[in-house]
Length: 249
Image 1: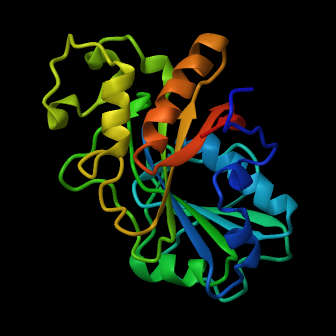
Image 2: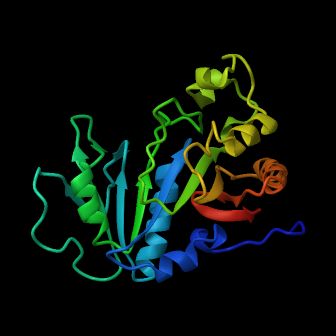
Image 3: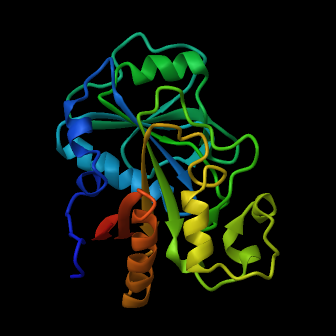
């Protein structure tokens, strides 16, 4: 393995969130927002499972839209705050939101979100949408990061590299990119590092990058180069395959 890289079995540890999450307890949870392109839901699901196994009460929600998970406990907003505790025991995941006709969950009302967050040890929030594209540039109103957020994870899919922007980049017009332009490693790093890109509204919060779809040696080599470029700008993260960290930078 190249110098400076290390493999971890736990993504939260690889991203340097593990200790903060383990120390956190209701009513003051540690809040992580996920932004950027494809793979956010997969990453969020893996983080939730790691925390559940560590005995944490985990709230999974959104400030935009997410698909209803196939497994686990789901709480749908019914215009009233629940009168009973949300979590029945330690080591539990609850996904909460408003049910839409599309089948997705939408953002909770502010009062409901605050109440549900107060009962969790850790909160994971999908704070951005990318229409299933691997790369995302935010519009003026995006992302929607809750004020309580402690850390932000920006996701990007490596399947986008070398492909035309029109096919892999959501809101390409917000970055002044031509539809036929190809997404290079340099452009991907620029988006991830910019405060007009994936770091928008992050401020002084802890910021990490997850390079998804690191499924082959070609992608891992690209991740190593991108990781070195990001590290030079003080940005750390991990390249992962199906939510499992393969390379750390």
